[in-house]
Length: 383
Image 1 (cartoon, rainbow, N blue to C red):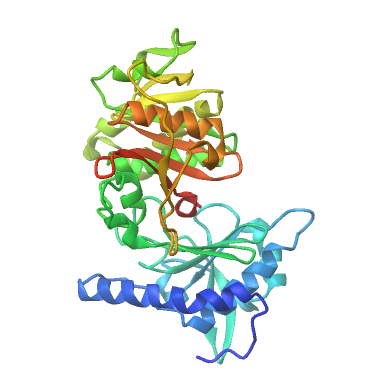
Image 2 (cartoon, rainbow, N blue to C red; image 1 turned 90 degrees about the vertical axis):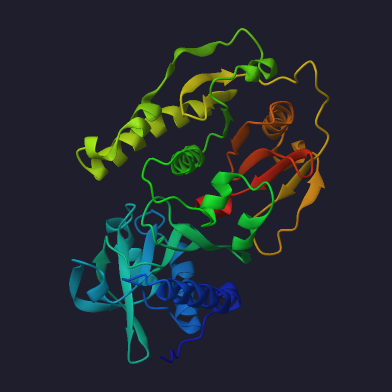
């Protein structure tokens, strides 16, 4: 298909070919593996046009509200039981801004298809084929290209993030680096679990929820059965939980056949996750163990008596061109990041999730290979 319109958003032109290659590669591999219900691959020009239209729509307002909308490239026949408009609508910023208030809830997608050299909006859907091209308008000037995972569980896989003239393309090869934390590897599609109660899938939901409350915070994940973490926390704890709160842990221990419906379980888990992550907004760190049992919140991190101050961390971002660099942890985001880095330097079998108020999100973990703290910035994967 040949589209005749020219894009005026330069980042759309810059990234369209890269995104097309990503979808061509993954859909071809999925087909070779016998996967079914695979989406059609949009051409680079279609991708460019959709991004261009969505970007200019994101800068407009409808009755004072900024549009939040998710576009999906698919034909109605692949959408299960779609909501079909009686008349096709042109894919334009005006159309998207007008539709946005009615389709801004998570899980609702505006269907886009093409005919005779034109892209059009045909309706909405809550069902997508595997590897369907999705374009999220998250906030003014911020777009995220993503797709549904084959396993159909958990957060969509992000492909690229565009913010103004800045473009970040996710580097999936980052998952293959030594000492990559399991949560990062899963977000990048490596060793992702299709088990609904897998601990890593839950930790990803916790990270998304932490970032969403926009207050910033620290979550420390420590080994169950160990109290070594107490060496790195100021005592007495003002908000210690005794006995440990097991709301999330109890749900994870349930067997699938004891849950009435998957949707019921997911809603229950979401409530319990939000219950815990809301506490990360309180000044200080929230502590859970690797069974997701809540131990304390509002905790003050200190350097263990046996330890030295952490002077530098290996900072990296899983995007193309995101080369590792040695930096002082406070330069990532201030005292919150310095405290988290110190905790991991002293408690090397733990991990720390740190959310900033500006939306940045960092995982701190210990690297056995380099014998130092590593800091992965992952907000490009959580949008």
